[in-house]
Length: 182
Image (tube, rainbow, N blue to C red; front, side, top):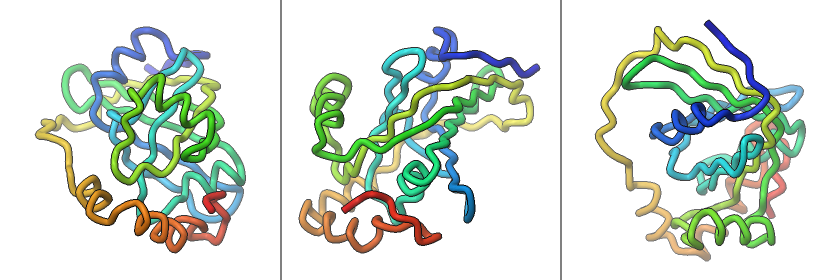
């Protein structure tokens, strides 16, 4: 049933690119474990051992705090249509600050320099292993579209107000850990 791999194989990449949602999980040595849904449109596979995703402003910034404290990061993809499958990518992540040189280079090379409203940072994952499992208990769902509320909220707020919001809500985790966002 479950199989282990040392990197993202072409068949894994094809599966990931068909998905609409993925989940990221992170934790520090103490405190809460964070699990968040993410939009696959923000994710890029740079090579078999490197993944990045564009992270938008949210009510918290737990992943950044956990990466700063510990670095462990897991991404999970589930087949909600077609053949059942669960794919997990395990590795170590780091935050690429918005407007930093790595962020700018990746934005240019993999996102056509298109930054969505509310872009906060990128999450960079160095892949250590990939695991697939059956996913036979994952229910079937129909994808009906993307939610636009976050983009509308960020656009209406404007860049200056978003910076203030991030300073108020995104500089510490719910466990009091720094996120590295200033």
